[in-house]
Image (cartoon, rainbow, N blue to C red; front, side):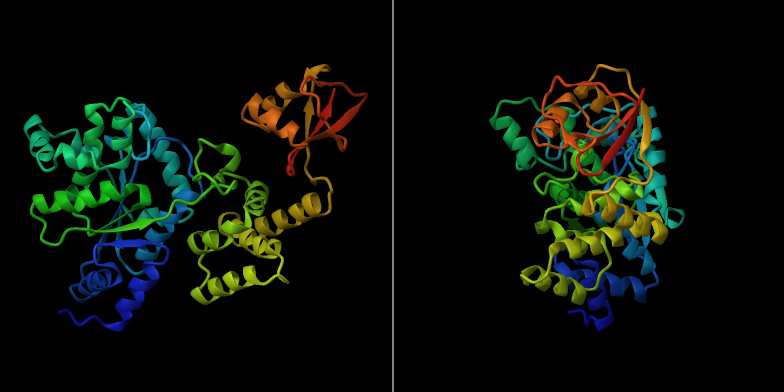
Length: 407
């Protein structure tokens, strides 16, 4: 029985906030932390990234913030770009086979990833690798050895595969290789801890199994972080639903406004996973939400300011808060409305899409039906409305999107 010193138990508790730690939980993590300190061998903390899209959102930062905590304690963050795995596509949580990416797409997206990730993690101090460096060099014999470490029955315990099989949806054989490839990454970089979202449970735990099969005496621990919902409070934040997604590339006003639009039920979760508030402060926030005399809007203002300040600085957060209060609370107009030349007779649905106020005509229709489209303060209810005006008008879409339309 290892005598665990209190400082490492406290470290493990802080690192485990909001996370599920497998196996062994906080105690086993504390043992790893203590051993790393006593032997002067920093833990190798793995995060694999398949750059399937060019931009990141706040949901991605949940794991990234945890990496930053490990960095501050002196451990080595190992970032794996999925040069090989992205060309397969992670089937986790998917109802159909994902499209593969080209080498060029992966490289371009990865460049954008690291630029945005540097807002949270010190990428210059991380070890950055590409799993194409080892996976693309494997021989067929190597692949057979790797594939022999798991059975088809084990693969079919994955919810996504089991569901697709039961529904008669196709499962390509190459998809079985994705979790094996991700698991072998842990062997290649000698990971001590792997971070991932809760949808990565199977893949990350398989990493332990594969490490053991390849002779690692103390296989990696796994730290699973929650997937956060988007601003609708219903589905996980994803670029698939841009209207509910808060991107790291959003300007300060948009980021602040989107954060103010989350349902009250997400306030505590966002504070816990997206900020550094203390446990004591987190409890105070929870208690405040139960107090009928407290307006949740005030807590959201604090949340929106805290997160916006992290990515846009104090000046950006100050301006975004002032703009939000002016436009949304006081029903004023933004200070920097863009002027747009418009052809007379333009259909309102087409215009909303052209201005990128919405992603599609379907979204535009829903916005109009909800009374969210106004011209000079008057709601537009007609889907066939043609834009006509004398000199200029103010178009408003939702609470925060404005344009000055001119001839």
